Amino acid sequence: MATPYDAIIIGAGQSGPFLAVRLAEAGRRVALIERSTIGGTCVNNGCIPTKTMVASARAAHVARSAANYGVATGPVSVDYAAVKARRDGLVAEFVKGLVDWMAATKNLTTIMGTAKFTGAREVEVNGERLTAPQIFLNTGGRPVVPDWPGLADVPYLTNVSLMDLDVLPKHLVIIGGSYIGLEFAQMFRRFGSAITVLERGTRLIAKEDADVSEGVRDILANEGVDFVLGVSGFEIVRDDGGVRVSYAVGGERKAVIGSHLLIATGRRPNSDGLGLEAAGVAVDGRGYVTVDERLQTNVEGIFAMGDINGRGGFTHTSYNDFEIVAANLLDGDDRKVSDRIAAYNLYIDPPLGHVGMTEAEIRAKGIKALKGVFPMARVGRAREKGETQGFMKVLVDPATKQILGASLLGIEADEIVQSLLHVMAMHAPYTVITRTMHIHPTVSELLPSLFADLQPLA
Image (cartoon, rainbow, N blue to C red; front, top):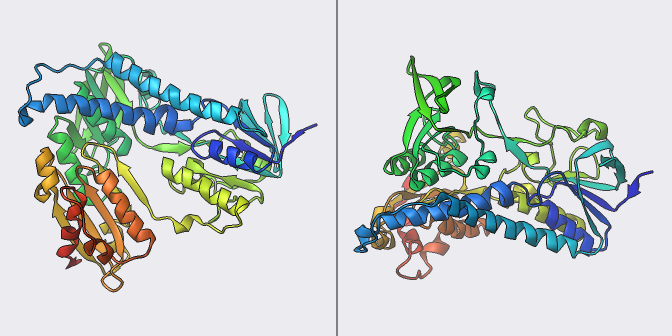
């Protein structure tokens, strides 16, 4: 006989624990099932650990650049074991906080094990069957590992296994020139590793506009990261304790030998193995669970949040999924996925902040727009700090004066982009920004200058 609950949540990533506590505090009996680690990707091998390492890498970079500011430091070295220990300590604190929080929540039972549907309202875990009228999926995603010749025979790394690495790579070869690969590229370059990035596309982060891609490449190349674009035909073998990656580029076969190989070619949803067919839950061609605007699947009472639904792929979109579901089920609200505006950051240094549509998307849709571009080299705050790389770009609707999208590449861009997001969420015109007094000296005080020279998109 199945044990009854009011709600079952499968996966303790960014959405799961928060929804579990919210439902439990509302008086519902909740079971939260997790097969691996509480906190999911963000806490264990994503945002928290990687950005902690980014901070250590920046400290090394600033120390090496100290002479530019009139400060003498002497030789700078990196104790990678200490970097790892600091990172692991912070991750442990976050995990413990989540575990203790859930353990102290009445009506909430946490079960460690692998869950599988046995029906539309029933799952099995550790040989026990549980049933509930509402079931929520929050099982996240995992790295894509391509089926390239020889890859399975070498000790390659992913963003997950890289967290267990306890030695600093002498030469890290990264296949994949998108968000994950670029963050690791700069990070380990600043730690002292030689870095080669191999990208199949003709430019980095192809989702971004070409000027943004080029700006990011310039920043990393200036720090000594080597790029090879337009590569294909990978063949991989062991080579004297390291890894030899052979590839084709421009009609020629070439190769690079690294001490370590990182595969950063994308992610896939953890929808397989859940027994979704037993529940009748539909998935698309890429394995993402299909959901409606309120994150319910095609089966009434079954919801999917976070990376598994293909509606965001970020920690903040996963948390927003929780907010949407909780508001609709518990607060009598009517929130939808389409209400949110696309926004994200790339945490290289200086960072990239993006909100809304890209210039390429606007052009493809034939939308009339005004464009403003402002180089960071003209920002006083950036010049004072000696960090003038990058630029700010904004696109505006000429009729409504509302912001359509923006890409900010430069110092503090990851924070400044949030102010644009707020204005966009209010459906307010950009003049709200230009008519506001800004504090000096800041980077954001130059936002009015960004809007001052808007020109029609050619």
